[in-house]
Length: 363
Image (spheres, rainbow, N blue to C red):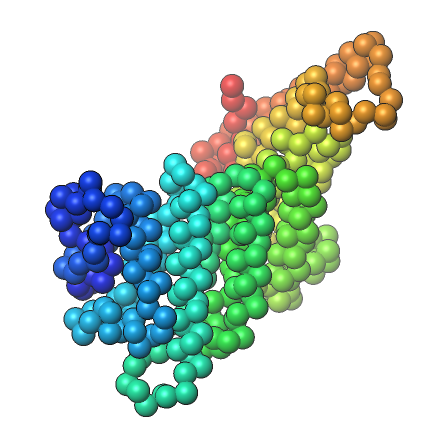
């Protein structure tokens, strides 16, 4: 475990003593270890985190930053704490304020790195400020995903676009800068939980984009092209988490074709697992539960908002609606039976304890 003097994390006892002071009275002190900085940030209030970010933002150039942190702390050590600081903004109760703080850190970090890489005085002796890596972008996007609303999804999308557009300016850091499966998962999570009316369209397009960039082709899924002959980018192959997030968004929508869309995604997951010989891509219990939920969702009485949305499309009679609900219930029951049959097959084959894709009908 590598330790170094911390440029950001305040001494914990000093922080406790100052708890009653205003945010701008909390000064950044030195002396904590790197191993404790992440925990220190986690224990801090958003107000105190904001105070640290304001001090960071007061440094307008890499030279000012180096002068600020002093000779006892390396720039690399400071950068590692910026990752911890962004991470401390995820999982907060006040998700929107936390996400804004995370984005401010990312934005100023990118500003300093851009100025550092473009500086004319290369002989100044000031080390180049490393740009934020994909982990910083991903954590910031996750902070916005935690907000679970439309604006958060839009911000996550804009951060992803910024990451892609900025990659050319940091060619030397390309291997640690471009989006990977984690970045796309954060984006998908943000849209899946946003409740935006256009989220489903964006989610499906994002999955297609990932498959295209990963080299997943129709020929591969149809078994006409082997994995060995495919130029796959494993870092961008959408996994079960990605597909399940999209299935979840469909299951919560009132779209009449949501069960069909989920079934199509399940079929694609199974084709992908078969083509890649990797069971971790197969649908699991949660995937099938979301298919059942989609039928149940369509069987519910429409809310006032949904009724207003569909007004003018014709109202069904009570008997017609009752028949429709019965059809949906039977469809959901058939999924449950299919799950049970698959579970029995796994038990018979000794694969019922396979954590990769165990299917167990539950409560």
